[in-house]
Image 1 (cartoon, rainbow, N blue to C red):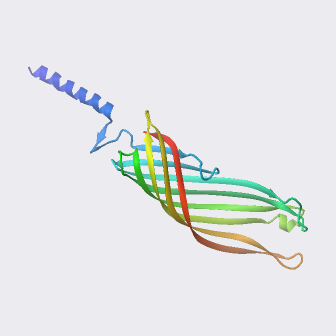
Image 2 (tube, rainbow, N blue to C red; image 1 turned 180 degrees about the vertical axis):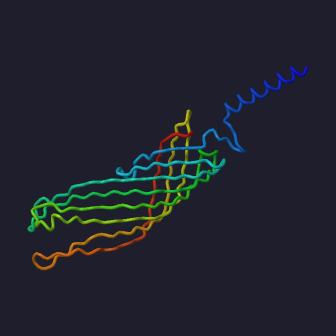
Image 3 (cartoon, helix red, strand yellow; image 1 turned 180 degrees about the horizontal axis):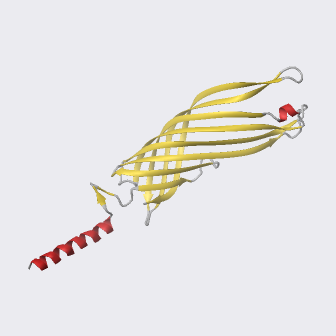
Amino acid sequence: MVSMQWKLGVSLVLLSAVALAKDGVTTGSFPVERRNVVTVSVPIQSLNQLSLEGERVMGERFSVGLGVFASFNHDRSRFEEAEPGGLEGFNRTVYQFGVAPSVRFYLTGRAPQGLWLAPRVEVGVGRSSSTMVGNLPDDLLSHDSKADFWSVGGSAVLGYSVVLEPGFTVQGGVGLGARREALAYDSLRLGPVDETSVERIHQSAWFLSQRILLNVGWAF
């Protein structure tokens, strides 16, 4: 009799384990089958920027995230005719990188899928350089105009996430925010013949921004 009860108990344990494996292992009151999401941005607003974002589910309707982004652009501009001083154009390079921590409150569904509202903060730094091209004096050709810039801002994004089997996820959303940008650059001052000077200029301003989000990735 004891042996039969023991066998029955083991069978119940095994059946429970199979059921949990099918439904997703749970800890506390919410499933942990997919606690992590990693996505990459689909470039919509800027073709030169790439964003990678990770999301960690902390509860049925709450998650935290951290994104990193980087952009690079190089362009060459030339005048149709060289200027009297010999200037033909410019070569310009710009790069930027930053981080964007966020939290998501799921209004419907269960994290990491459903309708959500996400406050987020973005901090970025970058540098640009511009080189004059043409038949110019050596001291001008050797001078690169450099600019350093940084930005900090916040936004609120309303979006929706879908997770398909076995884990492919698509996220879309729109948002509004504000950011402050600061810029420091070198300005070339032309004086008398053969005399030039470089002056450092500092500027800053506030901007309203809009955000369109489209990410694809994997939930696991």
